[in-house]
Length: 194
Image 1 (cartoon, rainbow, N blue to C red):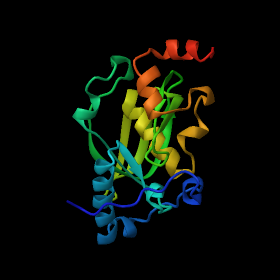
Image 2: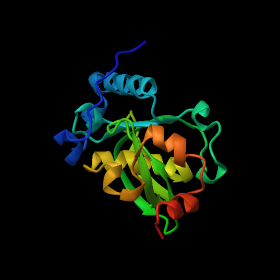
Image 3: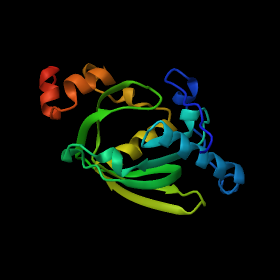
């Protein structure tokens, strides 16, 4: 087992600042490679599907993502959720967004115990560097696109509550009790949203 890092919670100033880009020299340094391993272990232990460096108190453009197969069990098909292998995003930029949007409950390791409806583009194209500093381009849709947008938001000083439908904000106990099994249209109707 690797070392676990402390995940900072909302209210910490590091979550509200734009993170700085990493140089190729920094990317190739052994310390950064070790940090990536610790971030992976911390994300898996939480458990979560993504972790950005600001969430562990470091204002740098680095995030790790992995949506393991066991996380997708019993998930409604409309979420378009498929397993995503572990990978690293360094200095990522969203270069294309679909006009079509999707809305689902979203949570965050830096706002532990809560969730809210968040509307995001259904598909995105992201350009970034991998852990070797090699340029990459991903075209993602569905839940994977949501994860990418959520983590890139962290690198730009945003958290999901900045984009949420305020009336939908709930703790996880009530999400599971009242809202989890409803279609989003039904949730919106019960909340009095159009």
